Length: 149
Image 1: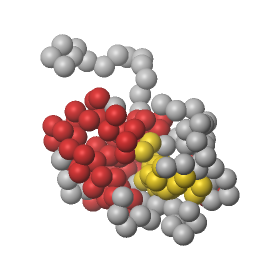
Image 2: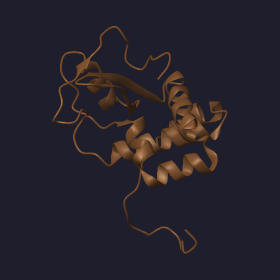
Image 3: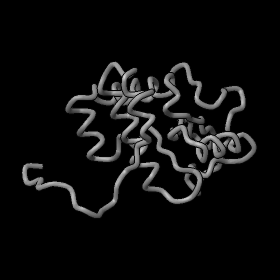
Image 4: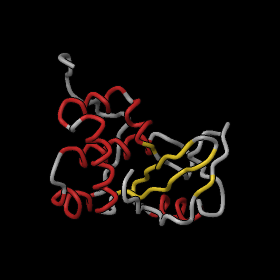
């Protein structure tokens, strides 16, 4: 992006809570977790409705996200480890979608709307799931706690 001339005065933006800078950022040890948090936040905020989330596959499919992880975030392995670290720090929360040949985690910024969505997902199919498939949430895994993704 050699022709970058600056940000517009008015434009789309991704909100990052101020608490992130004092409570989470100092605890990040590598760029992969920072990138994971930023990309989940960016992609989740671009969505409408209460279920605003992103899977690792969705993040990796975003060309700019992939390029940033490949440049200095450890590639695909860095994305996976960054998401895991954000879960450990509780900056992100997640649920696992299972069914119709799919078994994947979807990640949410840890905010009140996302917490309500994750809590409610135990009783119904996740609104993050593609409409063409049916998914079941596994109650055996607590939201936000995945030993290995």
